[in-house]
Length: 246
Image 1 (tube, rainbow, N blue to C red):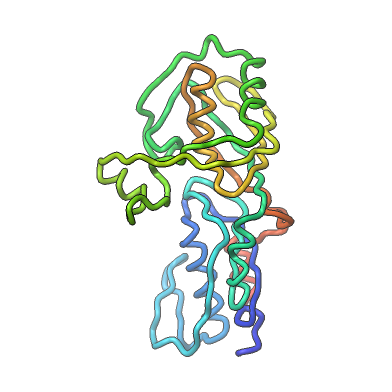
Image 2 (image 1 turned 180 degrees about the vertical axis):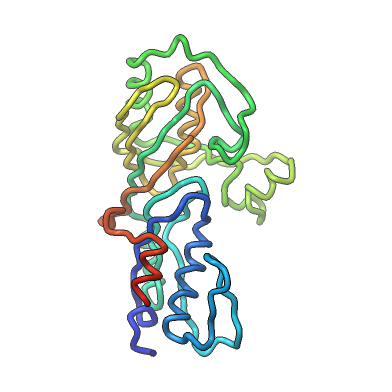
């Protein structure tokens, strides 16, 4: 058991499902591995939920290298065993995303986790304005993360402050976007491909993109397609990962 690659150290590439948190994916991978290594200890009662029947017989470190929001899909790097020591290295790698902005409406969290709160005009927006806005957000600049995020403010997660109905000031962070390609314009939807640095919030980019166009915008779809040299094309679904251990 101790010589299993999952214990000695392994990288698992997962295509995170829609509506799952990154922790949900880590939890599922961790206990699927434990069930595989010690089936008499763990049993799967409900899809996505595994409970402990007995005390763990061994320790297994598992963690992810970069959070994806519940409404985002795509590449999630999950590290096991000694490979968890490289999580910071993977998190620092360049990221690539594809997705869709919807112009003319905003939400409090800048995606569809919350309902639309305001509407804005879009009749004045041209394709040339959209392309120009994308160019403006290419390069290195300061970005204010969304209040609905995991950033800590005086020891509390920002999203917990937001969900309690309170507000808090979040400091801007320097980010870098090396590619911002508009791949489809079908008003009010705008599809994109972005290559960016660690710490870039695409939801915040939706907010800023809408403001640049003298309107509003929110993120309706997001998929992470690459982290460094790791590609979504090489990732497994949760179901495929479970079957690979059976």
